[in-house]
Length: 100
Image (tube, rainbow, N blue to C red; front, side, top):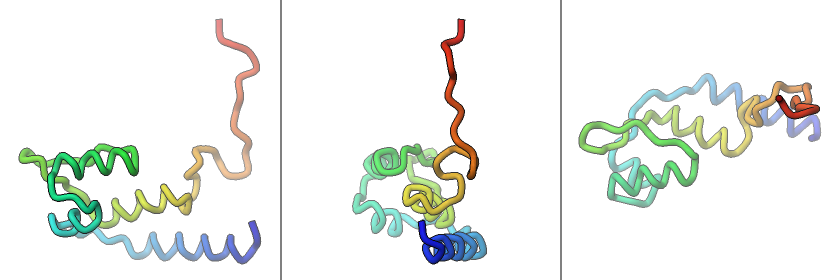
């Protein structure tokens, strides 16, 4: 990765952290994001695209902040630090032999 690209990613990450938006997504927002009206289909959409089951109210409506949604997008895009699951600068640990 070039130095310019690394700088852009770091700047984006810092801006994202500073602009955390804790407003809840409205039903209209969820429809616009997912393209779906049914609550059960919206839940399936989040499972399929982000691998998470969103928190739901008793009536099935999704409860999600804009910050959480933007975090899911950033993680999916690989912009968040440590999105790969390993510590930066450290190779992943691989077992040499099988456990008994």
